[in-house]
Image (cartoon, rainbow, N blue to C red; front, side, top):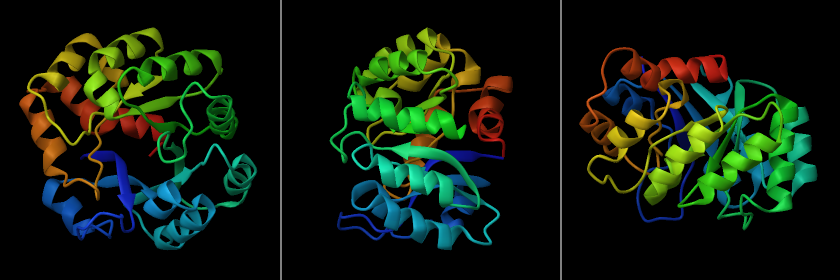
Length: 236
């Protein structure tokens, strides 16, 4: 079993054909379940994208949803968290597309909404911003956050962040795969705080699979990364 905690549904503004949350692609890589956000919600209109995703998720038993929250539209976000029903298991917040740094008051308010709803929040992190996310997590009781991309080129900051806050989880997908990046993180962070994500459909899952395979994970750690931590965090 593999659970992908960082996946998407819907077309991107790039010139490539990756519009669908393809179960065939999941099958190719042995991904049993995936948690997806709507591309429309992430980059354009959160309420419209969330509702389009709700219709797609209806009747699914392998796909779960992130309610995308735009920190600049908190009233709408609160409404979505109240009104949407179905297999919603988390909140998705993209800092760059919404122009909302982790340190901004609006981001803190958005994360407080996630904590109040009892949902983990997947937050886009890059560089040292993962350290800021750890501090916000420490400041908000009951908040659980996933550092999307585990800081990308800031994976050493991610190590520090995860060790500072045991409610912060690291998810490794990135469009680059520097040698030793994941192995270094795994060696320095409690394995209960590690997750697996691909950034599908934006990036083919083969990228994340290759990077994780190169880390040579075995035993309990491999199981935790592949699915167990995600199943516990999202109550799947």
